[in-house]
View 1 (tube, rainbow, N blue to C red):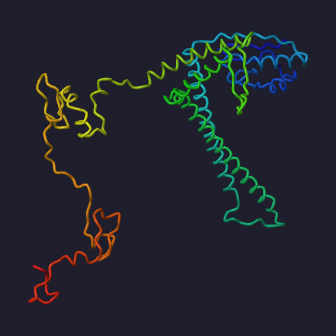
View 2: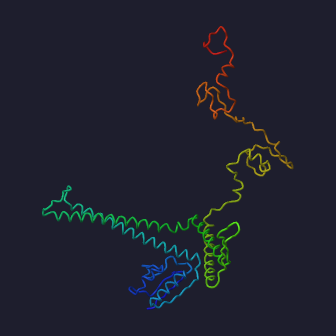
View 3: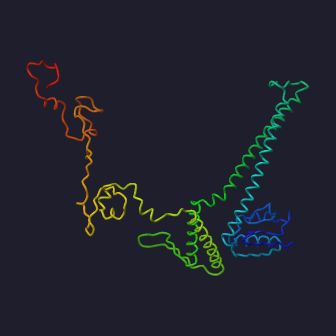
Length: 372
C-alpha cells in the first residue's frame, strides 16, 4: 500500500495510507509524528497555518522508504490570510471547549456514582468496627468485605481526581481564545514576530557575528546570504509572518482606547504647583479662560506680561525650621541636651537659660513663686 504525506495550510502535515501492524508506528513516532485519534491519521502537531517542516518530512520519507514502503509527498506551502486562519482556529477551539465541558460533566457523574458505590460497600461491613474473628466461619466474608470497601474508596478517589482534571481542562479551553487576544499578549506577540522577521532578513542579506575580541585580534563568524531552495523557504516564511504582523497590529490598534489630543493639552499635570506655573510666565495663563493658580494679573493688550504684574501672595509664610525648647523635648528629659535631629537652632548648655533669668527680689524667699 502506498503512503502519502501531504501538507496544506488548512489541514497541516498528515500521513495517509498507514495501517495497524505495517511497521510504520515506530518510524513515525521516532521522526516526531503523533497519532491524531479524532482524525485517525498520523501528523505533525501545530503544523496548521505554518510553513511545512521539510526537515521532518524528508526524514520520515527516507525512513519509510528504507523500510520498504512506497511514499509520495505532496506539499502546498501557500498560506491562508491570517483573518481566515484565526477564525478557523477560534471555531476549532470553541468545539474543543464544548467537548471538554461534556467530558467534565461525564466524569463528575461517574465520580458521584463511585462515591455512592463506596458508601454501599462501607455499609456492608460489620457494624461498630467489629474485628475479624480468626478461624471463624465469617473470617473470609469479613476480609472480602474490607477489600471491596478499600477498592470502592480508591475508585471513588480516582474518579474525583479525573473529574477535577477534566473540569480544569474545560475551563482552560474556554479561556484560551480570550487570553490569546489579551492586549499584553498581542503586543508581546507582535514584538516576537518582528524580531523573527529581522532575524530572517539577516539570513537573506548575510551577516557577521563577533565571537571574541582580544587586544590584537577580533574573531568573527561570517554568514553568507542564503541561496537556493532555502532562500525560497525563508522568503515564503517572511511573507506569511508579514501578513500576521499586519493582522495583529490592527487588532492591537482596536484594543487601545483612543486618546484625545485636546484633552491631553488642557489637562494640567497633577504634580504642577503654583510656583512652577508662575515661573513659566503669564503668557500661558492668558491663552485660556480658566482661573490661573499663580494669581497673576493679565497684562494690557500689546504689552509683554512680566513678573511685576503678579499680585502679592497674602498667605502667611510657613516656618522653614522646627524649633523646640532647648532644655526639654519629647525625647530628652528636662535639663538634658536636645537631640540633634529635633533641634535645628544653636546649642545651649544645661543651665544657660536659668542663668539668663533675672534674680528674685530679696523680700521673697527662694522658691515661693514665679518671677514677676
